[in-house]
Each structure stands twice: as C-alpha cells, then as structure tokens.
Length: 195
Image (cartoon, rainbow, N blue to C red; front, top):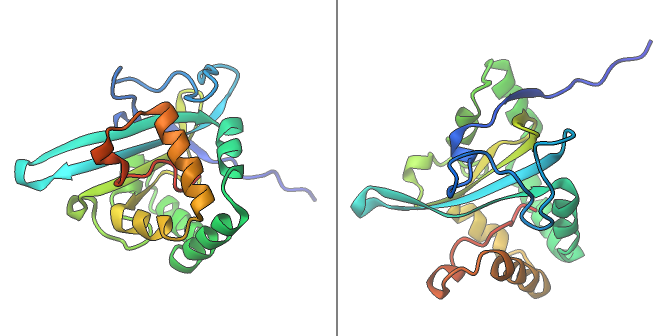
C-alpha cells in the first residue's frame, strides 16, 4: 500500500505579507527578478517591522520575496558553523512540527494567527519593538507548512550572536546590495537571519 504525501493547506496571501510600495503581493524575486506568480513558482517572503510605542506607530523596515533557488543560494552562503549554531538554537527552543500540527488541529487557516507570538519566546507581537515575519508561498497562495511564523527582536539578536563574522559579512552585503539601509538601521533588524 502506498500513501500519498500530505499537501500543505493553501490560503490567499494576507496583506501583512504584501509589498509596501504596491500594497499587493510581491511579483518578482528580489535577487533574480524571476516572476513569482507563474508556473507554480515557490518563494519565501520575509518582512521586518519596528514599532514606536511612544507614537503608536509601526513601520516596515524591509520586505522582500526570494524564489527558492535564490533563497537556497543565500542559505548556502552561511558558514557551516553559523548553520550549525542557528539550527541547534532553534531545535532547542522551537518545536515546529508540534506548533504546526497544533495550529492546523485548531482549524487555524488564518495565517495572521500564526504570526501573533514569537516562535522562540512566545512573546505577543504587541509587546515587541521589533519582529520579523516569514512565509512560504507558491504563486498567489501562501502554504501553511512550518511557516508562516514570527520571530521577535530579542530572538533575532540571539540568533545573530551565533553567526560567524563571515556570515555576518555575507548578510551585510546582501542587505546593502538590496536595501541600502541607512546607517542608523544597519545595527538593528538584520535581514534574512532564518535563511
């Protein structure tokens, strides 16, 4: 007897994962300009946010989509030491299969529910000054796998502390090439830490 693989649930991409400049789903890969809505192209969306509690304002610091080929290339640019340390950290603090099963068991097909708490520290989004959200998409739909997820600024900082200087340089180059962040933001949200 053979079993068919369980396909992930698919839902429309919510506005929180849209491109800021168009207020619509990302259309091309940031790195190679490949169209994302054709031929079932799979890609990852990552966005970083910063809140200013005193002004009750939240801003998007960065947002992009990378096709899986470019995402894999970026992941491979991480040093072996960085990948090992980040994987060990996440394995110690996060049970992604249990989290995913729990959310799907609750019939939670609303992806915004998946991004309300930091996956590492369980801190509510409303209590975070900085956070990043990630999603796995195909065409115009989001796939509910271990993504989407949200990771808070403190957990991002803990991951960054585990990166080698070589990897930090790679990420800095990626950030500078694609975003040109102003100097005052370069030390904060790092970009694709979970690549």
